[in-house]
Image 1: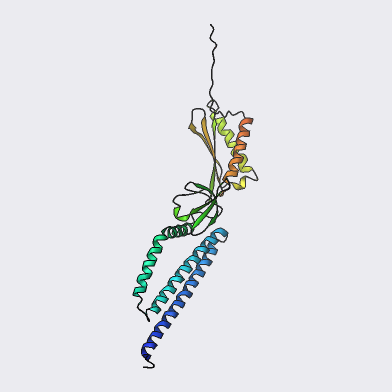
Image 2: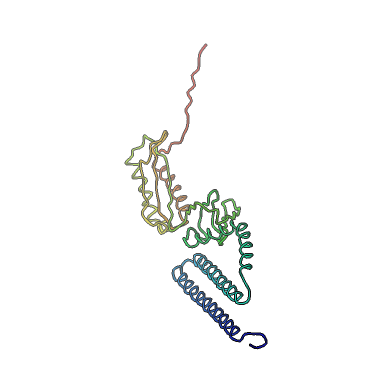
Length: 278
């Protein structure tokens, strides 16, 4: 006993604290090593996709920070337990945590939603998406929100926790579809040949050809309408190329149908008048 201190108790407490500190440091070092390996794996898996790399790196960093904080908090509580009764402290922290938790439910919901968006790669920066009633190009993704730029230029900030249904128009590959109506009076074999000719032009075109992932398909007759027989040309393209391909396809279809005198009727009404003599 020295100055009222029990040497054995002090030594034991000091040893416990040292073990906790060393264990916490080793845990942090292990977490950092794992995060570095995960970062390298993400870079190797997405070396040609910079935005996807950034998403995965962000996710790894958030996970590393969260686990390190848990380790530090656990170590501090363990060390304090050697000096004071931490039961009242934990009770008060629990009450405060409950209050904060009730007030931050939406925030936690957004973070969890953002984590799943990044993990599952539901969409990336540059993708054209529909998130409920919001549609446009994704400009930024964080754990809490997604920033979507609409066609009219407005920026929509959508909480990730509110994202329920995602429609991604530019994921892996896209498809351009052009519909047109052909008059019932036209010869179907001739119309089929005209449409296939347009497809051949697109395939052989030096600019459009490389934008096709497979030969376009002609579906004719597709439907029987009141005014015309429906036809459709479908083109599989790389992500984001479908709109330009569809526009060029419409131009060529109109030009060929005009040149080949293929009638493309439209809804109209004919009114017959008859003069009534007195």
